[in-house]
Picture (cartoon, rainbow, N blue to C red):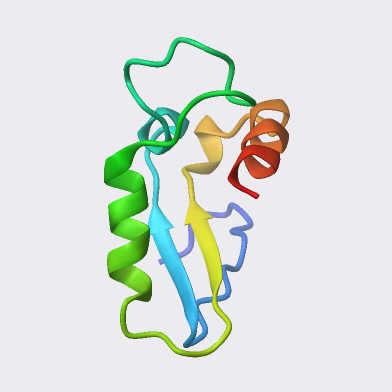
Length: 84
């Protein structure tokens, strides 16, 4: 089905871990009011990542999928630095 919108192609290769994140807040603790650059990562998010890599032995790449209409580039820059 074609919607007339150009869709971004996501690389879902084997070895990559792709997680759908509906909100950036899902990555961080609900109890931490600080900016994304300082927030504590959510234990649920960390556990989900651990579960996804449990059987992987090779180098992996984590891909976070987020609805395009909810993206905020400034927040994503902070989040990428925080996740590293």
